[in-house]
Image (tube, rainbow, N blue to C red):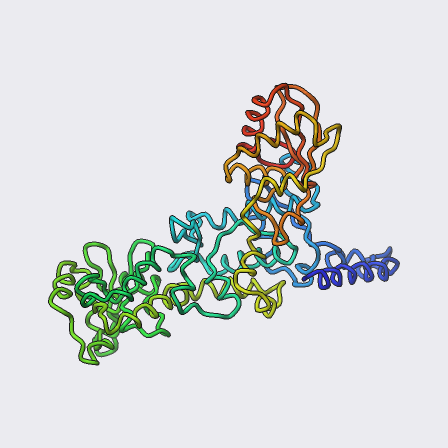
Length: 477
């Protein structure tokens, strides 16, 4: 859907280059010779947006080269030169780009990098990290990489919940069904809370009316009954500053700022007890049951928090979803979204359903061996009936789903299919000599597998598994 814009950006530079090729003027300093106008406008007249990446610093180089670039540069077709200093011979016909984004995004989503976090062991999905100490410009840069990849028709090796794509479409998640794909265990627990009918949920669940955020060096329990939705004073950096500096005073010596309360478990309560007015439930006359009060007393950290009751449980679920998908990651998401729409029209995502938008960005993660076999063609002496090809597909059909995706990544530099499915992938299997001491290699630039002819099926399986599990770079197993 971006071909028209991309072609226009490319055509404009070609036309401008032809018009200016013969234009020159005298050197203003020496008064002699000529300065060609095309040399002065070399950057403007480039037909492609080219970035050079070192393999040992993929993400750093990427961020350095896309930051503060002119938008008309970003709108040109992307070309990536990667690993050239390490002796790799990657020619960018699509495979180098895919390899670049795979490595860069994987590094950005590493929990140790501090920008994203895993949210559920079952789904293995990622989410923006609340209360991160990383600067917001890093989220802008990651958003720009997303924008470049989608604009150039590439899929990204990410797994984000539908709530994330719904936010990019300008919609909020308000129902349990809308967060279930990313947080199935949480959704199940909250649904049980809503459906409970055998007595008061405060007696059985003993759940406090708070939202807990893991921050560097502390855990913050935000009282959702007292903290307004537009209040940002709960954030980790604010609490950390107050905790270190202590209460400030005005000219009379009266305290004007109160530090949050931190118990011996490292839990920071917000707002602090001295600033706590009546909650919504207390103002309505609701009180805790004896069992709920007992549960709160058993955990001193939560002694200032209200309990979830039959009367407020529906509002509690709504508040929890809001804090989970909106408030806790508001600044991080806004920074990401600002850059995400650099190459993409803000109206474009609204043309798709959230699931289709997710598939456009992430591709199709279900890879069928039968589909791969149907789109493969052969060269260099191989045919579908060749013994090595027969052994190859027999071996691949015995692979686990993870091994199949690794094979696809080994050949095409991507472990998933584009949104168009197998029709958007080309795989070529070419004979690469004979001998059991050789390993399969690939040219990801062209989607080509260079497969030696082996003496037996067992040798082929051993060499193929060794290659796909230890591959790195272009044409180097």
